Image 1 (spheres, rainbow, N blue to C red):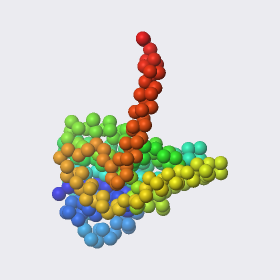
Image 2: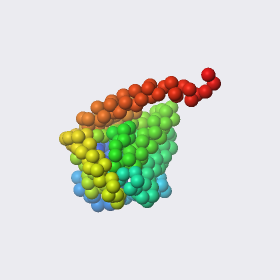
Image 3: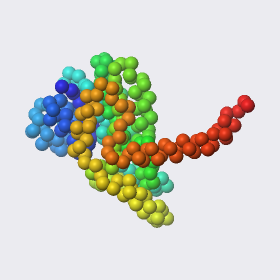
Image 4: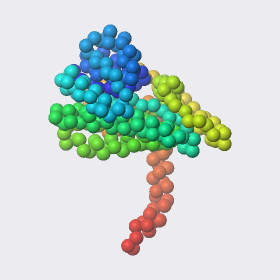
Length: 274
């Protein structure tokens, strides 16, 4: 039996993984801005679920919620940073407030929860942190550039973190989904005020997205996958969810390597001392 702490549990992946964990007999501290969205799960699973009201942007509240969960269940085994949203808008269109809000939730929210959990996991000498990233965390696409930037930041600190906490028996996994039938691009998304000059660019970006996500994945199918991850003796640092991200990543990284090699002579000249 494992004890989970899951942010953004009211819908999407967070809700599906909460249900998957509870259905197999685990315990879950599930956070949401509105815990009423978890009432049906509370009725179904009783005391196995601890609903916690939380806005992950509030660092003090993050630390309090993680402590409450650990005190309530006696330990923490799996910490899932799932809370986040997509900010649409071309780079020139984004306001300062929109950019800061995207990073507050997608980067700092995950960072604060991670920092809150680490002393508990270190003391246990065990634990598994799951960071919900995206194919957009290793590649980048037009009209979601600041979302991409937030996920790249999550990827970077999580890769460093994995090397820092391995000594304590703590595992870190970045889950990188492709397109799924969640409301990431719907009600949960936010949109910058568009500039008319960019309309052709926006239309092209929309067509590219359709080609990348021809058939969105089923969020319910990810429940079994996430259970396999947390039960693995040697879980991966990175794993894709969905059929499609590997092809995108392969093309992207092959292109990067080819370009770096093409310009290697200049790179070496820039080193100096020859």
